[in-house]
Length: 218
Image 1: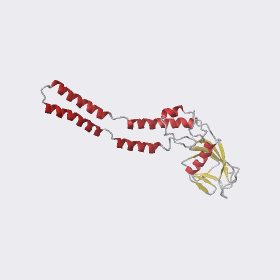
Image 2: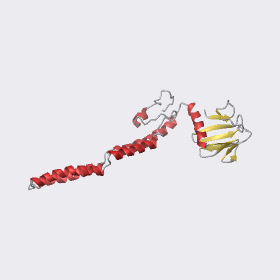
Image 3: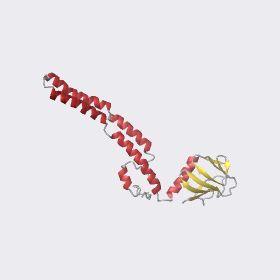
Image 4: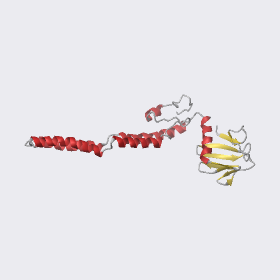
């Protein structure tokens, strides 16, 4: 469905019951989910975009739309149209490619958060080597000094971990990352979340995992 008719009659694809809206008021030609080409169907009270009467014009989701005397909240109008478009199509290959690109961003940032910090490892190895070299090449160290050096290795490990990201901080970052992406990493048709699997799974998936959704991904 690339063209949608809008008006008061129930024979339209989208119906709005207001006396100032004509039975067949507007035809919409779908270009993208945030841009339509709209044509007024010789309506009685006109179609207005940003306060200007139009015959044919592009409508973007940042514009203000008025049919007759009815002013629409543009985002709600686009949501209504987009739901209708998605309901009547199954080929979502183009939309899914965008989702996968977004998933790559999410997965990359997630990997950066969960990967172990190299700083604690570097500190432990560096100081550990220094202490081992002292123990090997300074044989006249008394037992008390040797014992103190062994304790120092353990203390260095503790201090090094304090410089790295604690698990609590990592979990906070992961939660914030999930909040940022959870409403974007979804099936482009039924909006089922895709975050329950990693990107490798979704790169090989042919369609939506929701059995009631017929979206084809690739």
